[in-house]
View 1: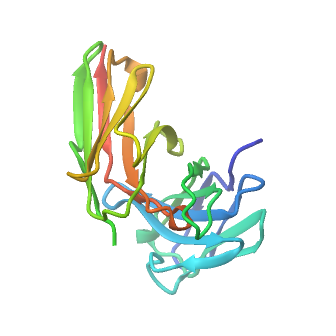
View 2: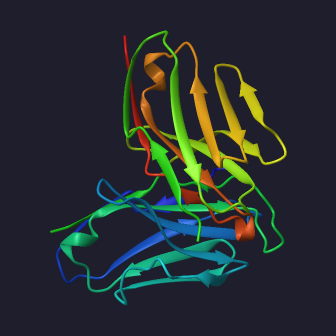
Length: 117
Length: 112
């Protein structure tokens, strides 16, 4: 398997522009997680999905952030409009997981480094 | 909710020495404790994990210990090598949808 795939790997944009980050989870995994990593705040969980349904979006910082998972093999994280403080590395991770208490590894993608000027 | 604290934030050791990173957690329902290694420019990668029915687990030069009574777990790296230099994260999970609560990370520097 190719692992979790994220695109683009780097994104530079100007304040006010819309940014869309993409993620393809590992086939067969039913949980998908979006994280943001900064020096100041470390790894923050933004939102996670199970079987394509958003379970908890309490980590999404503002209404400018939105995420979708239209099918089991694709998810997007959108920021509109973007601001300089959104500059960070955004990771997508996937795992096998259910509400039944399954315990399993999360597999992380390589991340998208976002710079908002 | 769960709160995971990790110490130290930075750790510098000489090649060949041992390194220990410690984490505490607050939710007694947590029963899965993975450790991730993040190299520069890459995503975190699992290096070892432990479940609550086990007190210690070892994999070559790395080991993890768990004390459920005290709610703390530790990562031990023996005979450190320069390629061990990275940021290490601990995490805890109750298993619900496999959501992880991560510690703040430890930057390990192994000096040759």
